[in-house]
Image (cartoon, rainbow, N blue to C red; front, side, top):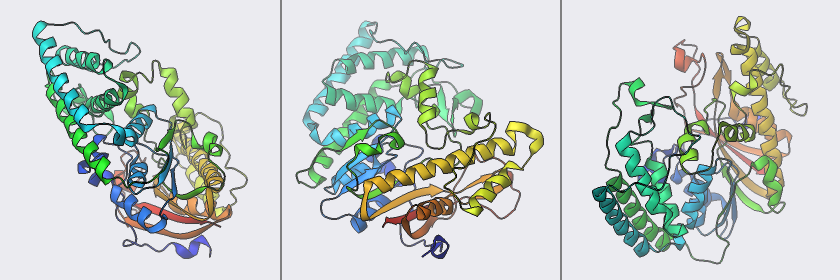
Length: 439
């Protein structure tokens, strides 16, 4: 069956994949993630498509929602993730079942004692702010930074499993007591009318977060299905470069959500985490991550003279859509259609690379579920889900269906769209699940 024959909207097949429900779920709630999706969606998919002992793969693992749910259900899990902070978060969560909750609670008590004593005695911290980290205004106010550095002193003295959980609690909360915020992208609080944070109860917040982690670890250890399997692993490498590390045709189920065609800069928005956790020390480190990213960024693609769509992508509508974008607003130069067409062409070339990697990894008859959002570039609708499906079908996949459990989503970084500009052209943003099967 051609892909055109399976594009009916189906709101009932899958639950809404939005990340919101994870905010109160054990283990998942440790790290808020802009690009995450719902544990309920993943759990439903695993129950439907995985056998009693399966290998589950997420090529764009983020902070590990797919991997945690599959691990809980008794499966072997593998993830790829290029962002070191996200990879650290996912691996720390996967390792949590090996941590003693009682030891973690004891460490929380020790942390409180250490911080109270250090602050009372005016102890100067040994830890230092990351030297390469530059912001337009101080990231932390002096009182807050003093407490943060003392907390890092304590964390540095702990054994690795305990230290990792404290580090993750710090990283997941660090922007909250900084002079920056996400509204929607990382920026100064004062620019959105919020005051700078002169002081904050850093000790109390971190102790509360790690205590919650101890409760979740206890839950994880008792909920995780028993059975002999390798611990879940994160491969800190691009899926495009590393998929052949996986045994060919060994994966039973692939669940993922690659970056959308929305120019959201995931790495840049974790810049404080990457510096403060020691994963980056200069802007050059971010250049490397940008080169590895699925779909590059408009800021990188716009300066190139012309990015060709891969010749093996022969679909006429994909090519016509990119050309329609290219013809928009020529008077704006790289800020007009030419830059955005380059961006789109690079994105769909990476869709092909993803499909080729999935073809290598999946066994015959295995399912891949890809959560992806559509886009609107320079006012031109781009049905990314349908285009991915066509690329996959041309590469030998059977497209089982394209499901749309969420027919409306917000996309603040889409340029000249009906959503942002209110042009009333009838096009909106939605989120889809492309269900495909390897033949």
